[in-house]
Image (cartoon, rainbow, N blue to C red; front, side, top):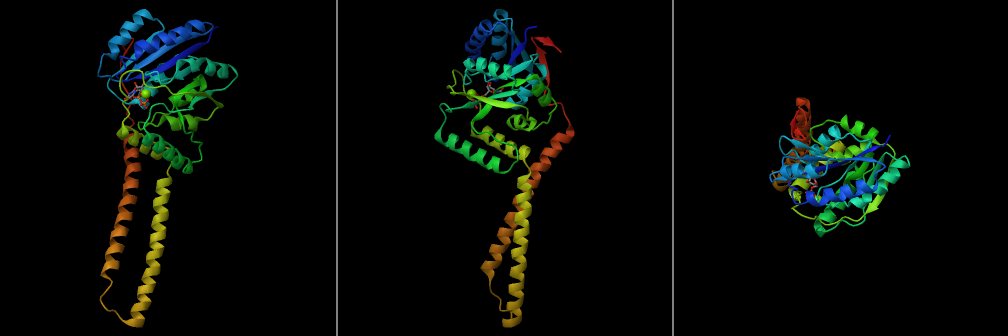
Length: 312
Ligand code: UDP
Ligand code: MG
């Protein structure tokens, strides 16, 4: 029996890139025909004519299937939809914009045949990204790594091959606030990597601006670790201790030297800094509580409008 390889491609406004990507994948599929191949595109509520493009492409390439989500949910959720619908014995996740070069896929398959379950592609270069984005990204991974027991891999994105066992594991993680990169680490399994050079986006525009990236970064920390809560506790303990010491100092000073009314600046500083710390701690609590709130609603993470244009 030939094994089935699925390629999962989340797509948001990718009408320009898809006609370039799919023929490349088709080429690989024809070359490695001792496998069966499926390309699954998840149309994540695109605002352009991505759906029509997919329809046209399916006319030409019968290996292509597509899911149309009911609205734009974001890449993380689009990937979950893909996990649910891929049929393959393994799956390769890749971006539609050819930043993830398809020629790496055969190398991944080799490793898969060697018995690895999760083969991630690590970037040697990060392509055309601003200096600030690169630096911020490295700084962020550094911090994230310090707060968790799981291994955090910088320069590793979602471009990877996952065995069916990993797909089944990921399907069980159905939280609404998703940070898939953390999930790959969480599930474990036998991992290895292949190196690749990030290419520049071939067409269309990146939908990840600093705001989305910032939100994803916060999501990463909050869904990965509860260390911020611990920090709030520690800061609280330390300030309480300092306050106690200060109280003793004032108490003794008042007994020894009386109580002249002074120290207004000290008062203000103490009040303001304590107030600030309290608000910060409350904010952190709130962030976690907000997530508990959305998760307890237990809503389906996404809705599918059609699969290959058929209602389901
Ligand atoms: N994407 C998606 N839903 C979104 C935003 C992006 O499915 O809401 C897809 C997009 O089509 C692409 C991949 O996620 O295939 C990566 O997006 P992008 O290239 O914009 O991000 P970057 O490479 O700049 O991080
Ligand atoms: Mg991209």
